[in-house]
Amino acid sequence: MAGFGGKQAWLAVRDGEPAAVLAALGLRDLGSAPWRDGLDLAHLTDDRVAVTPPLPGALGHGWVLAVGRHLMRADPDVVALSEKLDTEVQFFATHRTTELHRWRRAAGGELLRAFGYVGQTGEVTSWFGEPDPAERDAGLPGELDDETSVLLVERDVFRVAAAWSIDPTTLTGRAPGPLRIGAVD
Image 1 (cartoon, rainbow, N blue to C red):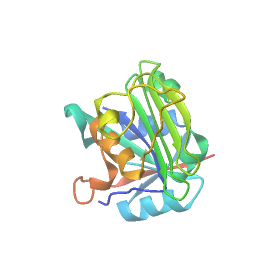
Image 2 (tube, helix red, strand yellow; image 1 turned 120 degrees about the vertical axis):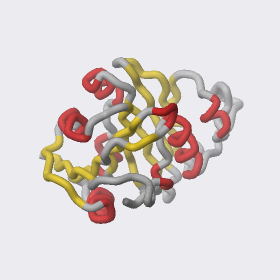
Image 3 (cartoon, rainbow, N blue to C red; image 1 turned 90 degrees about the horizontal axis):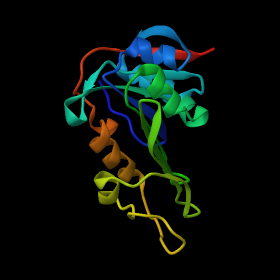
Image 4 (cartoon, rainbow, N blue to C red; image 1 turned 180 degrees about the vertical axis):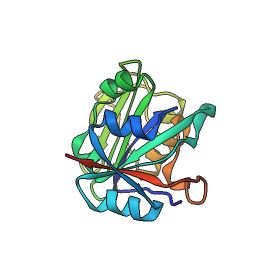
């Protein structure tokens, strides 16, 4: 098993099942793949997503991660997914070239939190809800106004992911089982 990191987007689904995640995303199940091969495929193509088996993570829950460049472009609706899967769904994206950093969190069909930032311009592109302690530890202010400046880097996305679900950079050697590969139809 291998971890993944920058220039990537992923979903974290609390207590999810890989087949249900693939179905909720509308992806055709292509079967299993070794971790490194599956992650490379998801990172290098626009129409494949790799889905992990359930992994132990934050707050004692199991988390299924769905990862791939497709998710960066598709910008999945975590609210609809959380309702469809009847659980908490989180979305993370980071791209260090433009310093694009995003995260969203939804449960029960309701958006709990959303944050988006483009470091290249210093623009906050989305802000919904109040930052929790993990986000404040990563450097977000308690509220956003015209006088507030925000400065985040890629590692801050992983810090928030670790607190909410799983930091995917820490997965190497941690979990058994192959990935499932989904294809966009």
